[in-house]
Image 1 (cartoon, rainbow, N blue to C red):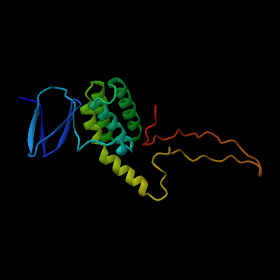
Image 2 (image 1 turned 90 degrees about the vertical axis):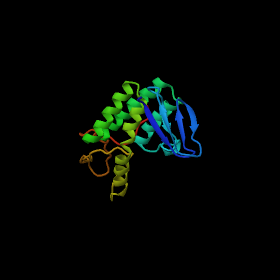
Image 3 (image 1 turned 30 degrees about the vertical axis):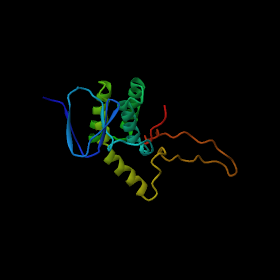
Image 4 (image 1 turned 180 degrees about the vertical axis):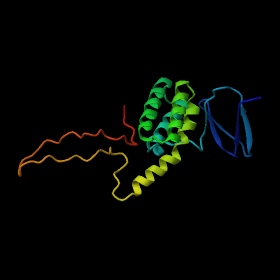
Length: 178
């Protein structure tokens, strides 16, 4: 017999296909035999107020899709956009592999697998944000980082128009609303 086996602690709650199920007073195991069932442990769920970073926002969208609180097609589009934006900022090989797997999962309609891949990025995102916030003189993470512009030489007392940078803006970790 194959399928997902959930090991639940006493009084632990889990969301299965939109229904909240609470375990009894003892530890137990549940075997989920239905393929593609939407399952989310509520202890692992990201609450709305906690969706305050780019990866957490994408995970939250996936959770909304799993719980049935977001229309499937709209969630799919938002997930693909969010993953694409993250792929512009997280360019290391490990992150790219997880983002590619998440994209493939969304395209196949497997939101749970996409959520698992995105959750694997949370520790990396936490480290990056901590490093950016702790670095002396570091720009805020949500602000785009651009190459410094060279001010054109002007006569004293004249105002010049800002010149576009020769370098495109580097991607940020902030998801932009669509």
